[in-house]
Image (tube, rainbow, N blue to C red; front, side, top):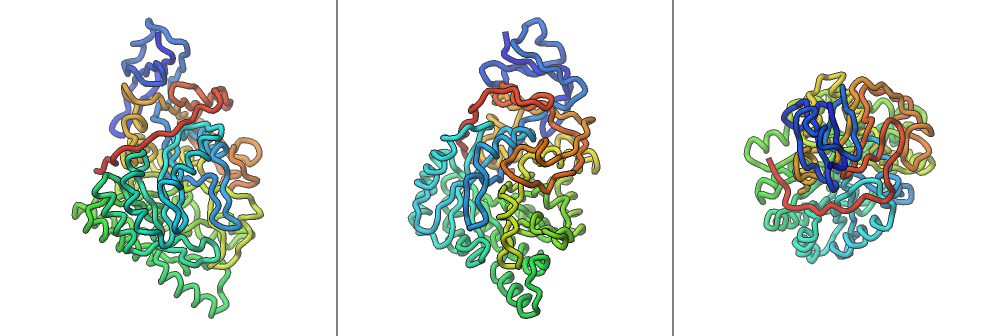
Length: 468
């Protein structure tokens, strides 16, 4: 007898969509077969997915929980973030530890895990490691130990050297180069927030000299050129070291082009896109309290957004993430100039449904491509594929049932589940919605109700990234 059978659905992976049933035992998928194949065997729980898509649980590979990097930017807890993500179909999230300056890399990872594991987690998680500022060479030597402990991805910033908003984050190219030498040697991947700080500094000073320092001019302070310049520098380092490179939140079409150019030469480079950057226009910054829409890098014009969508459809961008950094309204409104506006958006819950609605429904993005960006590729690149990101025997039974015909309007205070007093998605309509979310065989969300056990989330150690 099985613990769970999901029957009558259209099961999708990153290649095909097929009418199949899934059988689950002891938190794992144990069999996949034709409709009705497992009926005689029986199961403790049967979920009927007739007329719906059955997808691998979503993997959001870019969130920030329990993190404070400035007076304003204090993120929500792992408990709150995992809860919101689960309601949106995310069964695994990848958060970040952070080492400040001289802080030991491995100790910062251990501290982050202790903080996370002490909370009531609604989903599973993995970790990246941020290394900030002028970190000591000893931390490059610690990358090998971090990888052996299940953290294989290391993030750096090419901006925020002395910004009022987020100061002290920037790392010089030499240190990033040294990290790439280690990740190439030991089986890791380097992640970079790419914006050129020198270009930005010049533009900020120019805007101040013109009396145009209001944050609504952030697109001039941090233009596509700033992103492209840093992207191309990092691509060159990746090419020369042969280390895999993951560019977080690609927002400019020139960056997409650069990644494609280097991939054609054999560089193991990958691009991430955020769903807010796919749908939000920079004109929103001119609205009253327009800071609410601000993240780094800033939203781009429709020309760039169209290029991002095209890259999602063609496979030239590789993952869809949220970069969730949920902070209260008053904190979000604390800055109003191009050098102190507060970043961060509350987006983990809406990632899957907005991308389905705007991509699959509105732009005819294929369902396998949807799975590729939201689950399969994040799992591959961050070393958890096979356990996560796929519906096959041996994998964790992380399953999302997507109702393509379900229409839904997000309403703050009614059907959003983060710890926040506002949402940029308040009033946003979607066509297509996760209606059932299953974590390791536990039905957690079903038809608008939380029905699962508490405190079931756990750490998923990463192995060597799978590049492609």
